Image (cartoon, rainbow, N blue to C red; front, side, top):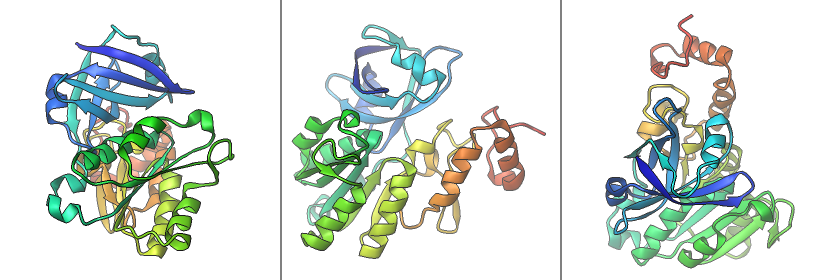
Length: 295
């Protein structure tokens, strides 16, 4: 069992939990994720590791209620436990493997949209701990849905906050802030990392491609099974088929076929859609989740 040491609401339908998981906390890196199960018969839920404390043996997860399982998770309190927490899974962020001296000469811009702030935070924190300050753009629909602002402010070089409705700080989309920083203020960045809703990442990548700014995206929002078997997170990167959970979750944003990924995401939600995807994709589909019809 994995005890929940802290459970609190960050915003409407968005929850944070600190979980005792010493072995995961000891080995995890920014960009990786875990799979949690509420009980023996529960659904496997992949969640990005938002933070970790190696000395205390704790990891922090943030999730949004989108279905029955996450709704049940939201009802857990401090003192409750998860039946299973498996990880770390996936691949760490690219910069973790880079030469530190080379990395210190790079200027990073992070773009966090909505719940995507959770996986951005450990990356920015890791860079800060290694003497590298990155700029961060945080966007949300309204002020009430903004999460981890103070935590992000503590680890970022400069934090820019924008809301779609103008209820807090700037008004507008994150792409407008990128344009302002690069085109109007003359900011120079070597790498952009964008994590958030698929549609947000798509338009960030369209803009950064025009700007000639290399961009990394995390496709954790499309994961379901988390082991490469179900086919839900299949995505085309360049001319190759990849699976976000085992090949990613981070990819070259300019090479990701976002339109295909978003279409698959919609189709995968229905039994008919899953069957059609399996028929179309054949052996490359991956059908080990038990949800795909054999017919």
